[in-house]
Image 1 (cartoon, rainbow, N blue to C red):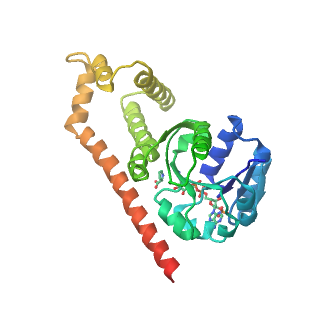
Image 2: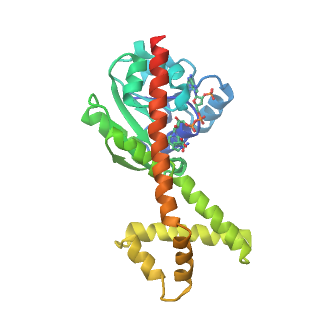
Image 3: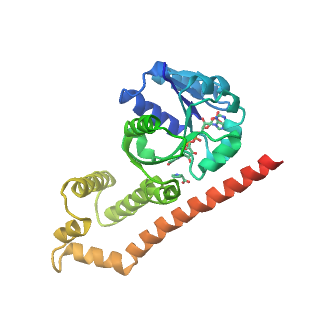
Length: 279
Ligand SMILES: NC(=O)C1=CN([C@@H]2O[C@H](COP(=O)(O)OP(=O)(O)OC[C@H]3O[C@@H](n4cnc5c(N)ncnc54)[C@H](OP(=O)(O)O)[C@@H]3O)[C@@H](O)[C@H]2O)C=CC1
Ligand SMILES: O=C(O)[C@@H]1CCC=N1
């Protein structure tokens, strides 16, 4: 039986498990999940999804065809140390921000078929924007399997590994930028006289409608923006204020900072794991 095993049982693992079962990609019997110590969490996942849980990672690694790494980046070494003897031709799928394929291979002490993925938290509602990159050892069949896995929790694109830092800066962290915009719009809406509840509903619908217009109208966002903007009207007043306050520059600097941070974290983790390996 083909099985998928998760090492790490947190929110990202749960979002993927929920999407995989809902999308019919795996049945609950085909899913195994392990964590470090939180037994209550494993019981909760077993009860909710009917999946198998364990704290025996070697056994999980032996039985799974795909092993998903879903711990925090700082825990990767402890999380996968010890599974190497259970590995033959399994596919390793890592959702860890800032941990390169080279770092994963160096912990395992061998070159493996590895796919790195950068999903986002909208995976919880099967709306993730995910990008994946594959190592040279990944077969076409494994790549297809991995695409179905991430397509079960949203959209999935294939990129080069070096582009994952940009993906992290754009769509991995992206939901936070949108939430910040909404926080500011809600504050303003209340200041200009709306109730919090009505403000929230109007803003959410505005975001959904705008996203769908960009996705489905076939028009460029600039064209859509111009269609809203009547000469000397209200939108012009609002957008001019955003431009005067440096909105576009701020957004560009934001994405670049997040991308840079992804590169810094990658280098930092690579160094600390290399020095731990040499000890
Ligand atoms: N949040 C986001 O927007 C995104 C996150 N990611 C990535 O997803 C990954 C997981 O994040 P998230 O789900 O939020 O993390 P959580 O903190 O919710 O979960 C981490 C899990 O890892 C387990 N774990 C820690 N150490 C070990 C170990 N030595 N052996 C086995 N299991 C271990 C923990 O177990 P226990 O509770 O028992 O300690 C816990 O179940 C991160 O690497 C992050 O970079 C990727 C894209 C977006
Ligand atoms: O903030 C972070 O580092 C992680 C990676 C992408 C989203 N959250």
